[in-house]
View: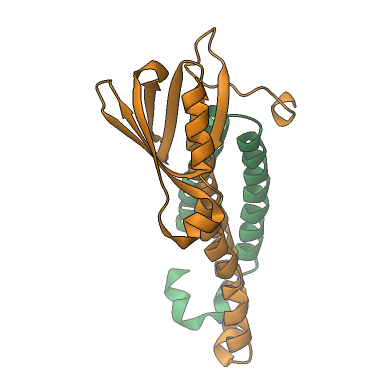
Length: 73
Length: 169
């Protein structure tokens, strides 16, 4: 079951990384002026912070207390 | 770090002797509406928390609730910046030779419309509704002698000024 959760996490991480890259790429590649570049930087910083908060929150989940969802473990 | 400091506006496909006369994006009201809704959505998990924090369900599943909240904010952050990206990448550039409209319609989906200044036959400005009138934005319709007869630039700020700038070229 640990392998399945690790696989799911890896897939989600790859999809999220791709989406983040695509957004930053568009800001930098097609943006005119300094505004889009600043937005790209802000977006990247915020994405990393929120992602690590989500990972931390996931690590703090007490699965044994969620009785109806035990079949997912 | 030079990309964060002031730089002269330039764009892909700019000709060597071509000068940018005017660069604009859609009126700020275009991005205000989605950002306003996103701002309201930020408070939703906390409002929900205050309604369920005394329940037994929350006491047993609080950790997974906050995990879902963190994922919710992550998704919201991405949606907000998707809207900002679409807004910032939709530009109208007036040079001494052409009018170029960049339309970003999504990820890896954009169109570029070009119109030569000397082929412009007629320019119309249309302002619809009290919001557009008070905030000062409208639609510009440009009649061209080229293959594509009409160009529409929607929700542009100060459309009369843009019309004058185009006429001066």
